[in-house]
Length: 152
Ligand code: 4NP
Image 1 (tube, rainbow, N blue to C red):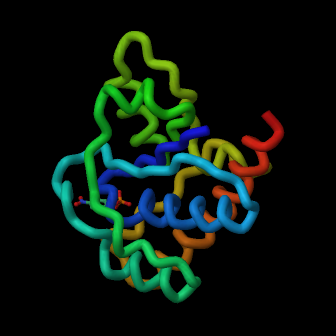
Image 2: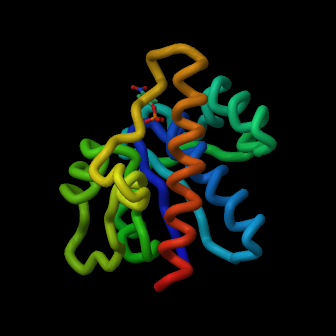
């Protein structure tokens, strides 16, 4: 089973979602292929934002090894599930989806009962506390997604 988390820059939300999902899978003893990417190209090759790294580490998860990359057409066949952080990112993924794409495409928060259709808010332009909100959203989303995947 393979999952690609996608946000805009691949330095804040999707690296946190990747870290949270790796931790959830590790705790559950489940082997998954997990990666993240951005729809934008601005931060390609960069590690996650310092604030994202600090927030994850404060919660016991080291995401410092991650490097930003841009989503590519091959991802739509390589990953069974493409999981977007917000509605704009989901729309942009659908717009660049090539013919023959096989990935399912959902919002992360679609997997949480009662939060379907909601965005993981972009913390990039805000303060450190926004990253804690992001961390909470992505950890809840990751556990819910893991539960959904183990049902299928
Ligand atoms: P992310 O946050 O999509 O959660 O990684 C952002 C990072 C960078 C930018 C926007 C959002 N930016 O405009 O550079």
